[in-house]
Image 1 (cartoon, rainbow, N blue to C red):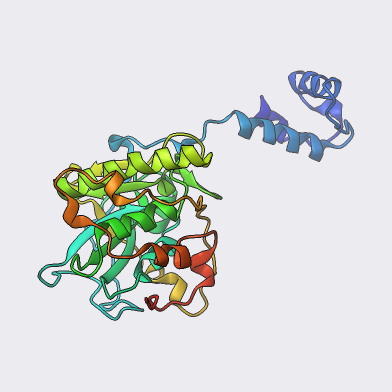
Image 2: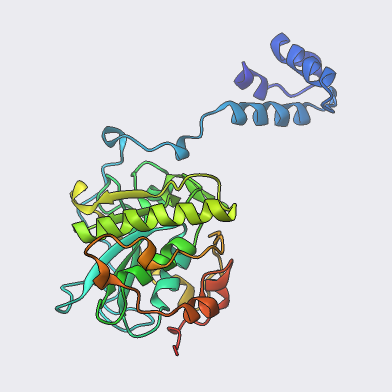
Length: 312
């Protein structure tokens, strides 16, 4: 019925009777509509139609409905644009990998590569936690791959703790926003953590519970944390590299200074208050003074230099 009205170009009488009746009801309800302006009527009808349509991008696609993807791997530069280390493995002995997602990956990646102490060896942006192999950016944004924009972090646990990375992850966004972050909406912007072993799982889950309590105590966020915490082995391949132009995007000439993350400026509680039993060796290496000086704040990554922070 509404589609039929879209082709009508003329006075009110040229619209179907059902549309004429709807316009009368809207006017009687107080909406200002010019019955002699067919373009205005069409705009109102289109708005009503859009409001009545389900938001498919906020619903996870089913595996059988996901895009097929491709076998070709995304090509990226051999070296990190800022850190100058390799972008792909095999990684030097002793290094660890973690994968997280907390909104648009441009700012997420920059916040991590800037952590001090030479503990961050390499970072890369890509698509994680979905079904489509080697998706493109456009495919991920369609909501039909199941992926979320993610960051792969390769780090030296002797120089920086996973707990330090986790603290930046939690504090750099609002993990209660469900399928989106700030102005960026859709399943491809959902908050997520993917673990490779039992220790990562315990640290993720315990820090999540602790941060949820901290947010609620501060009256911040929108309720319970919605971060997806899953095993990397749940997927044939958990992470696929994004296009080269997305890698270290905010450090490159001509980059658009954009970040829609919404840090709540609530600190992750002290590690000793939520540390899983037996994992005391993961104690943070960055002191509280660092977080007071450089902790995440709205738009901090787009206002900061590209080089890693010097500390102390």
